[in-house]
Image (cartoon, rainbow, N blue to C red; front, side):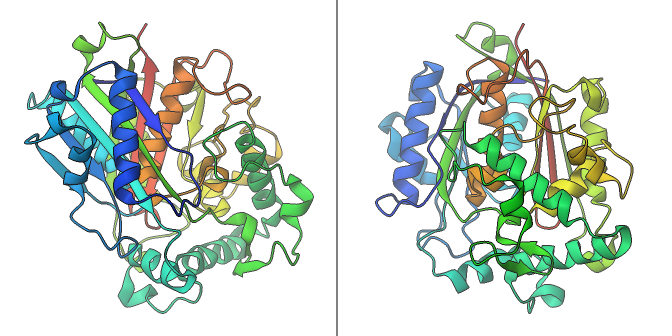
Length: 389
């Protein structure tokens, strides 16, 4: 590939009444440039990932990145959006700018502020990432969509409540060591498995612990052409990227297959010249625990319908054969829509250069995979990263 990550920044994810979309953007843009050790003057292009869909009254947000430094004025700046994969869409657009020769250095920022929105409105805005003619009246909003997916999966392959609780418990345990995570608490399997006043059913068989968090936050990356990146203090190469877009209506596909996820992984692994078993770890899109379960199958870790094996046999634990979401994933880290994909790339890059926080750092991580999904397996992005040797 032609691009490398040479700097990054990440706010904690959570509920921040004193912050705005603008302040979050400015913070990570400033910090990412400082981390890379470059001036704003050196930036050739800016890409902002920001879903919004009503969460922020301020739309048309690409130029907010310029607030970080007057030297960014007049740089090309574009906002991109692809539902919950908005952050990865921004990253991949930055890579294409470098690959085309249009830019040598690209600043990529992802941001969302969701917690100021009243609860009922949050569900309404998130549901915009589904096909409204079919799913617009779904009870429970987007959680209701995945509740239907979970119910269908249970009907076909049997009750998977144990596996979902194990996925939730794993990701919450991993999140304890991540200082950027919104929820740093090890709930344990028993709490995640049992219905309770603090863990009620939300949609279908999904309980509160099966659902990712409503979050505010931002993350940023500095991308550079790989030749120039060799002179930088640190560099993580994109060994492969892939994007597979599927039909929006779930009625036009087998929703239990996550076929777009499969295609994106197959393309990326082929481009990288590796197999899934060569990866040191994966950061995957666990917007709901059932999504992570199906993604095990879609990425090829298990056959169809056998995703539970991966969690029950410990394969995806931090000490397993393919650790999944050592950061805590969206489940513990939080899911500010536009920032999520950028965050996943930051977390992966940190692992690969040995700069992940203590307790989160994996031993000898040399190849990291990322899967970021928009909608119900509609926008599917995969990146394979490796440190510059």
